[in-house]
Amino acid sequence: MTKKLIVTRHGNKIVDLTPEEEAFKKSEEKISKNKKTIKEQEKKEKQQAPYIEQRRNAYPPIGDQLDMLWHTIDKDEKLQGIYFDFYQTLKTVKIKYPKLWTIE
Image 1 (cartoon, helix red, strand yellow):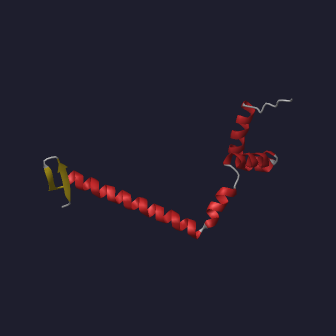
Image 2 (cartoon, rainbow, N blue to C red):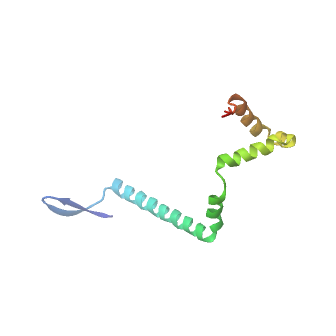
Image 3 (cartoon, helix red, strand yellow):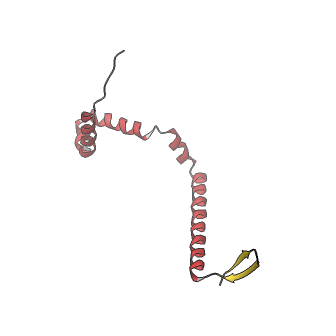
């Protein structure tokens, strides 16, 4: 059984952990080990595949990517049929909230 140090103003003493404390300690150790494993895996992935970070930084924002996709589908009736649900969902929003142009 694991021991713990109790510090009081009357002196220190070492006592056994309760079963609950023991279980909590083990779960904390497991969580800590998992976090360390995840960090090591992330570091390993970055070392093995630097293109992941390079691509992430080079891609346009996701909103811009979706806009490019929308315009590509909007120009092609065949793609409108293939991606019907996606296209119709975005088209409904664009119709409901049209872009307002201001001329100065």
